[in-house]
Length: 136
Image (cartoon, rainbow, N blue to C red; front, side):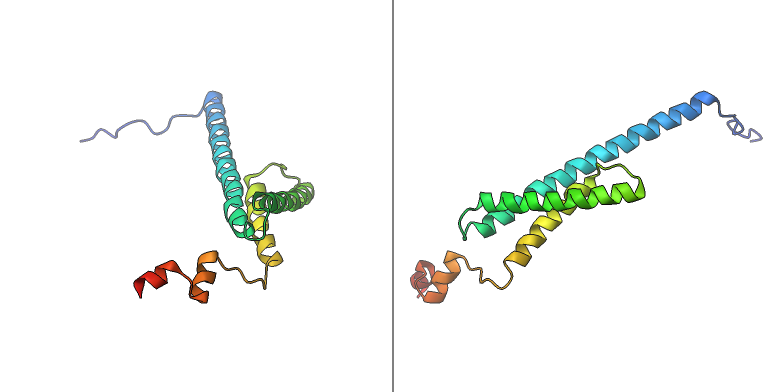
């Protein structure tokens, strides 16, 4: 009962500090790799709705590639200015996340006011849908 347990007054040595620094560096690297993986995947996945929406206009994947490249270009310039002003690293997962948001936003702005309707919706409005006729 009188045993105080393990000694909690151990001193840290220089090796312990180096071990902590190495572990911290490894954790930060894993976090950056995971961040880059997720953000690059989101940036590439943003091509799917862009291609789907722009396929009605013709071009499909070509139009989506233009929006992705434009978004990435604006994100690169913005990140370069930020990195220069704040003296930070240029490469960051935020670069690709910003590019994905810019690609979707630029398409939304460019196509604002346009009527987007799928062939199924147009057929239903015209009354020529085969599903609607079969139910009657």
